[in-house]
Length: 56
Image (spheres, rainbow, N blue to C red):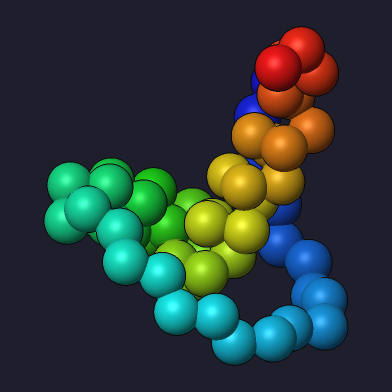
């Protein structure tokens, strides 16, 4: 199950272009959990990578 959590890490900057609808959904989630947009995006990416189907 996907659960948001707060934690610190070392960071590097990378620019991404995301669809406005996706930005709005992530920002709403970040606001609900009193977290940064960036932290929510990181956790979503980590979850997706950890739960990918390993078959190509």
